[in-house]
Image (cartoon, one colour):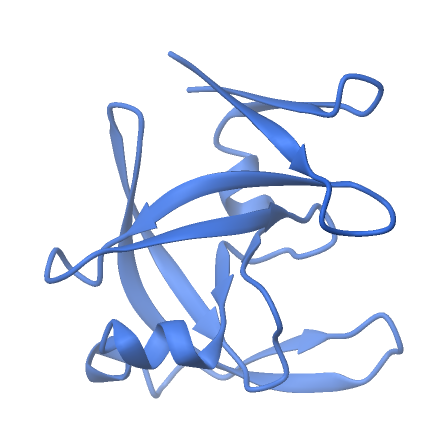
Length: 130
């Protein structure tokens, strides 16, 4: 199966984004526009507002000590929970992370490496093959 998306033109340098729907263990859902971020090694990073709106704090994994390293080199702690990400006909159980410092959702390599992902900069297009 193939999914197509466009780059976001909301930034000075257009960025690849993918529309996804997140389920916290199939309770309620939230549609997100997540930036495709090959620099983020995790799965899905959402804003603290989105995390709390979905009640993901109810499914946190406190034994997991996870942190992210910003481009500046500073390490920030991440809260970790569980979610389900339907993408096409796939339903992916994945960790969902948050930090108060995040401005927009990120879709990282842990998920991108499950698919064939093509970023076509000149056409400002994203292709995901499941």
